[in-house]
Image 1 (tube, rainbow, N blue to C red):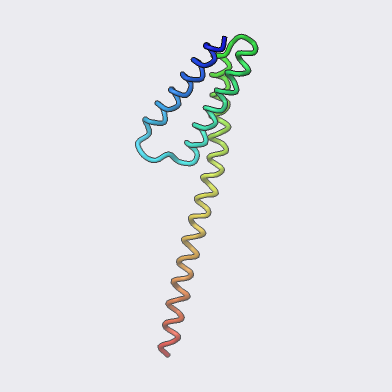
Image 2: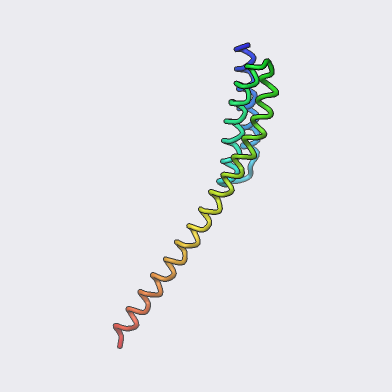
Length: 108
């Protein structure tokens, strides 16, 4: 039973790494959240599934639920990162304008 559990976790981890490795560029926060959620869900599902005699089914169900939850959380985090980036850009733009106005005022 323990061997089956270890194999299930190993396969779930390998599958997640293979899927993540297929990405063309850096992962977004949403994708990272989905991957972490899938791994955590698969591990938790395998543990629960092994208690009832179906670790593979538990890992699959847990992985799917974890990926969905992780993607949702990652999407929220990505949105916050985007808002922070836009605010920082606006602050830099305002600081540049203030400096320009100070230099202009000093000329008169």
